[in-house]
Picture 1 (cartoon, one colour):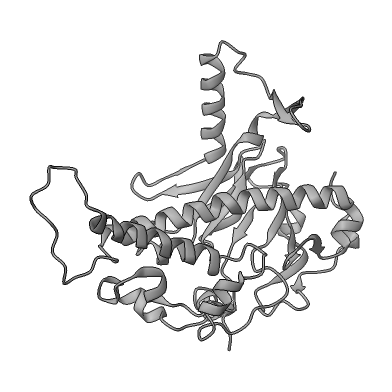
Picture 2: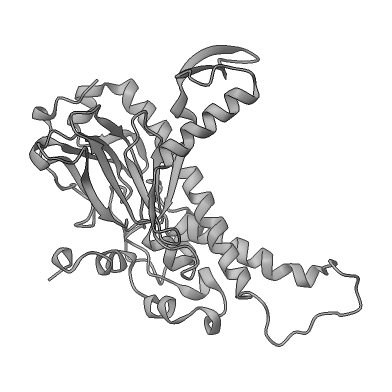
Length: 348
């Protein structure tokens, strides 16, 4: 059901956030065509969502479902960041001991245990980065707190990663059939995770091809191709799946076709941690005039504010870190987030 927005507070910094960027509440733009409800979980308390009025409207069961969805998407996002960061470190031999030569008498493809270690270290460092820098709304683990004692500056009681509820419409009386209802931009995130919507409208810019493409239309084409391969109706809008319902029991559930697809868009922080190998996705939202509204519920996976960037801990040898990462050395993630904002939104 549509949220009763009249009962929601206006967008403002969440109490106990520890960051001016951690806002919650309701905002409306373009004469009501673009509506946002910015929600966040209390750190370590997935049953507590801010603003509190959202639970009053949706109910505790819906909040728990949103929390489960948040956890599932965050798990995917952390894996993507971990893999991308480790791969970029391996690409530049960031964890290779420079003064050590390798054996040359082994057959092609063979790798000694010592030669495997740089890849293991790169993977371990990427895991540390994902666990310590990405704000999954959970408190830092005790081991990380101990290791980061000299580089932690404290963090707020509210997650920096919002679960945003959006509604995009187009009621503008213009000649164009399609109109840009949320302008082109990149996100200050590691990744932005977007459940595919039933109404397409998200567009991502392909710089090489110089075209905008729609991930949701690609998802629909994939769905239809799979259905054809299985001899099923490609025009179907739902499917029946089996889910666990207790010990050795399952039950059938009907879900919409788009429920199985998750769009993962790289953000500015992943561009940083991948050493510019993965650029932040330029994207926008368009809508058809007087067409069906697009509903979206993205998770913007951002950094914990209370951690300072430790390049050697996460990226290995400083001599291959690159100038951009080295410029970030020792800077709190809150300040990095602020520096990536437009000048009008930065601290004065």
